Image 1 (cartoon, rainbow, N blue to C red):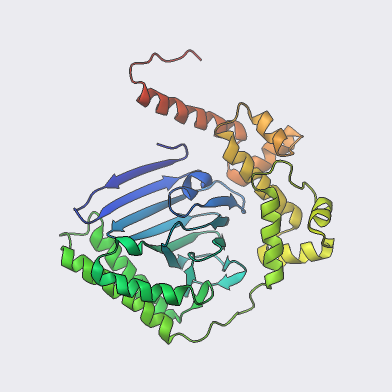
Image 2: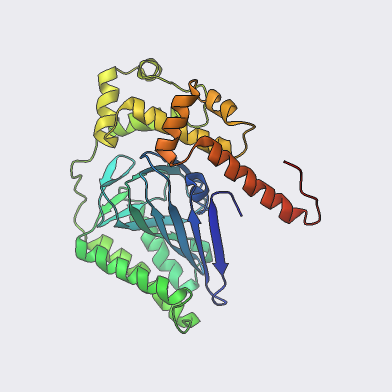
Length: 345
C-alpha cells in the first residue's frame, strides 16, 4: 500500500474488475490513473480528501474521481488511449488549458500536447478511458469515430444540460451494473451492448451540439503565463520565489502576471507560487531525510512560518506527514521481510 491512501480491488467477473481507493495525499491520488502520467498541485487550503472508484471493462475503464480541494492537474495520457468525462459536481467552474468548463460540458483529456486542468473544490468527475486496441471488435469502429470527433475539436465541448444528464445517467447505469452490489452480473453480450450504447451516445451528442461558445474563457495568453509559472516551479528547487523574479524570468511586467493569475485562478501570483512550492515539499517529504532539508531546498527559510503555511494548506504539520510516511515505509518493509526483527526507535 502506498502512503496516503487505502485501496481495494475486486474481480467481479471474468469481464470486469472493480477497484476503489481513498486518499489523504494528493500525490498518491495523482498516480491512481496510471496511464495518465499525472502531476497534481493543491491550490486551495485545507486537508486533502479524495478517492477514485474504477470499473474495468474490456478496453474501457469508467472511473469516479472525488476531491475536496482545488487542484492543478497536468499530464499526458499514454499511447492511443482516449480520455474524457463530465463533472458531476463542482463548487465552481473548471478550466482545461485555459478554456472555462462547467458541469454540462464534455472535457477531453487525451490528444496531442497533453492536458492542464484546474478543478475547483468539492469536485466529482465521471471519467472514461478507452484503449481502442483492447476493445471488442464491434466497439472499435465506434471508438475510432469518437476519436476523430474528440481530437478534431477543442478540449471543452459544450453539451446542453439534457445531453449531459443523459450521459451521466448512462455512465452510472454501466458503473453500478458492472460493480459489486450491482445484482446479477451482466453477460458478455450485455457488456458489449452497454459499451456500444455509451460510445454511440457520446458521438450523437457531439454531432448535435452547437458550436462551442467560449463563455468568457481566459485568454490564451493568460493561460500560457499560468503554464509557464508552473513549469518554472515543478521539479525545480531553484524556482522563482518572488514576483520580481518571475517578471525577469518570463520577461513580463508585474501587472501582466498579476492580471493573468487573478483572472484565471482568482489568487495573487505570490499565493500561486507558494501553493506550488508547498505541494512540491509535500511530494518530497515521503522520501526526505528531514523536514528541514526539504523545506530549505524549496526556499522556506523561516520554519515557524513554513509550518504554519503548510498546516493551513494541508491540514497537518509537515512533521506529521513525515511520521506517517515513515510508518507506511516500515509497514511495506515488514511485509517484504516478514521474519525481520523490528528496529529499535
